[in-house]
Image 1 (tube, helix red, strand yellow):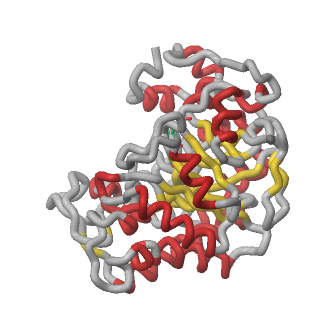
Image 2 (cartoon, rainbow, N blue to C red; image 1 turned 90 degrees about the vertical axis):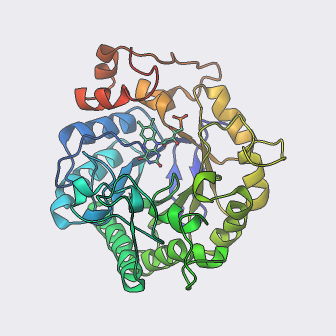
Image 3 (spheres, rainbow, N blue to C red; image 1 turned 30 degrees about the vertical axis):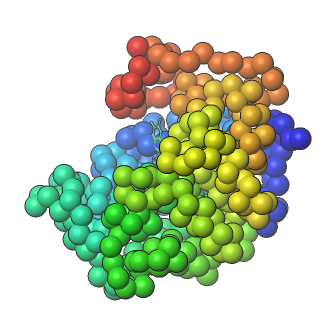
Length: 362
Ligand SMILES: Cc1cc2nc3c(=O)[nH]c(=O)nc-3n(C[C@H](O)[C@H](O)[C@H](O)COP(=O)(O)O)c2cc1C
């Protein structure tokens, strides 16, 4: 049985990851209004590369300017963003981590006050982010243009020196809105059956593959369940089969808590076990949610994950992954003082944002 501090080799590309610790994508609100990276955002991520993480994932980053979901979000939609992206990728590589940019579009969750346009989604949906309280249904030509935008964003990340991209299909944003039966009620080839609802994601994968080099890593993050918009466990498991046939390098499931069973199922097993069984080693699996200790990481691997995503523990402990050789590592949990978080390379802005997370900042 592999251990959390063992290295891992991606089977298709041969990329070697020095341990199983993956810094999961974390929005931190530190980018400039034009989507360019600030020194603070680069510093926060590079500190986690220095701290030993095998893989570093950026915050969710929008692929077109109208795809922005919140203030201070990094962008990958224009060449003016390349110098910052290049510096970030160079510095992460310098510390020996694999770098991934998490590419996304917020869809119905793109506030009109930020983008100046009515938010879009697969079908017309109610949203507080729109001036008239609802989204606009995407036209077929716009769907095609968005697929191209995802691919061009991946090309830009490749040019900047990132090892790959993670396509963000989780948490209710545009790709997830296509997958969800509540938010996608189309009856053309982009809606209806799971194959149709997954076509947006699968075509994005295909287009990225066409435009990037062989060795570029392409992975997908999904929510196993996002019941409020009609993303249900059975569909997500069927999606695993479709993804296993596509040319991706990993599947990342966002569980929030790897130690609880699915919410809408009689299956008593943990979500990671259920997905690992269905995947049957057809793709590398990353699972993420509530890992604080080395023991947790080991347990998530025993559930069937090849790599373990870590978010909140890594905010509190930039060197979390360098302790994976200690089976008894049990780092301090929140609340953290703001002075302490400053010492972990969070800026005041990021600390302010973390005050929204219950009991995280003292
Ligand atoms: C501050 C913060 C920002 C986050 N931003 C993102 C994001 O941009 N993209 C994403 O897929 N998940 C995001 N997440 C979710 C995390 O990647 C992770 O799935 C979740 O926090 C559970 O892992 P944990 O228990 O290790 O914190 C965010 C989580 C936190 C705490």
